[in-house]
Length: 147
Image (cartoon, rainbow, N blue to C red; front, side, top):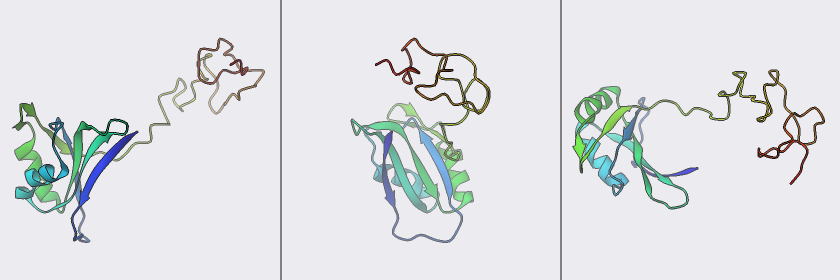
């Protein structure tokens, strides 16, 4: 899991805010520096830099929330590709947070069968399921509980 260092401005408005993703940030940057970079384009509602939960070091990307869509577009046009400390910034509209637990499975529904082969949609093998197909002990969910 990642930690997020976040700074919100003291005044919030009822206006619709536009959230931007900012990639290729210098690892030494703070939320204050990120806010200062975006302030010339409009009012910044909040800034966040994502950091590793264990080491607490920046992962090199963050998010900026602008008060208006117009100011967000101006910032994207001006800052996308701009070189900061030898790194070209990537600035684009942030996508909604996706739930990473679903999808990606063999049957399209997130159910891969636990490494023992394809299982019908909705099937969920339990640890001591006699019909479980994985008896190799190579997966986290060893079907027969042989630890």
